[in-house]
Length: 81
Image 1 (cartoon, rainbow, N blue to C red):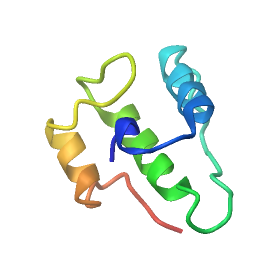
Image 2: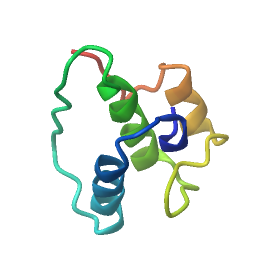
Image 3: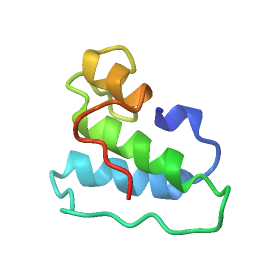
Image 4: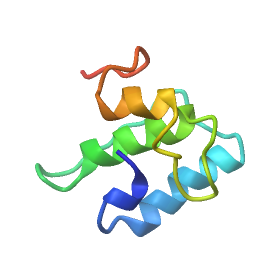
């Protein structure tokens, strides 16, 4: 999942991208909202962006092995609670 695939949430996407740019990633993030609002997609896109070695200013590359694993939901650092 990439940020470009998520409609809306522009402000939230920009805040998450800024945390990576400033190297100020929290040890935990809580994505809270009603069902269907896009919180899961946003959380996966953020995790993929953090792990991507070829990320751009605004999104992950989507083609590297890290991104491919996140897109298949099989990356070893991706956990669902």
